[in-house]
Length: 501
Image (cartoon, rainbow, N blue to C red; front, side, top):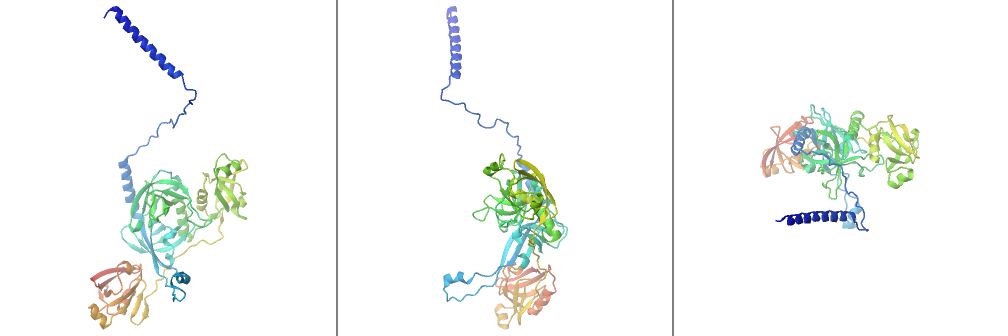
């Protein structure tokens, strides 16, 4: 290539570079007149540095299950129904000439869970699990299979909590956490006996806090539930919700569902509230509850602005009850309670729970917003005028009852027996024994598969010749002891052990 050609090529390259620079700068300089500046979309902050070690999380689940499962119990309650339907419910189907008889009350059986809170056998559960147990029976089954008769110490319908006692010692006890420190997103485990599947463990997170779902239908009811997506089903009620430290942070109580089964929304009572209720029931037999005496509601944006607040915060006092602790402290209708005992309160349940942990005579400090100013007041809580609903189980078992000559009912076992005549001996091919004529549904005998027309041929390895023989053997046993029966039925002979309830 000649010198002239080289110079020409360099000139062309330089011209191309210059043209490109001018073209680029021209595009940057010229904007359509209709275009707007586009804002920066999305946060420019660095991403949160989260570490998720799936193996460590799995090991935590395993360890928590090992620690907590032995403290969880199964609770079975057998109670009497209140009787049959009213006559006019049947007249619609059968006409006015139908001879109506109100059916006798029949037993009803319910299942739930509980958590052991003392070594000597106090158990925390839900009120709705044991309701009716004071007129029926409560059976508590431990994780190792041992069964005990439970005594209802007391129940509190305003928090849906109750305490049951069994006669045992050196039991494993659950460790309590601090529900005030819970945060949305924390891992939690729910442990209980859903759908009859004993000692089931499910995992989820804390989905929300301070939920009020309207299941406690009382103006003094306390609802400040922990919401979780850990699977909770019927039978989980009364069981613990625990964190990954193995600490109980809630008592599983309810689900939100269109089917009656798990749909992802479970609710637990905060353990800080449950602890106070349990302590009161154990110590006093009832809940000693302090009352502030205000009608409150959550603030919406419009009402907040109307009161002079920049945004919805705090709890609005709609009315103050005459003669209440609130009135004596100087609280007025239209006040906004911003804090209680140094803690912000933005939902009615949050304030209700703090007050529910207090007793009559306790003082509570309140930060109040009133007409553009913030003031502090102290209220001395007063007791409720109404008596708390507390029920105790009757510890007296009815003795064996002779219904007619040769027929005896053993209510402790749930069965009725009669002497065998010669025709029955021949039919059932037995030399001695008594025939079972009735088995109470959900009784100890019923649960062990004993049915009508079974023959008891032995009790505690001794031949049973008549009902008097069986009566003497059973009455020699104390509550909690086991009697071993040998039965004959169409399926053959078998041994069955029954605990005297």
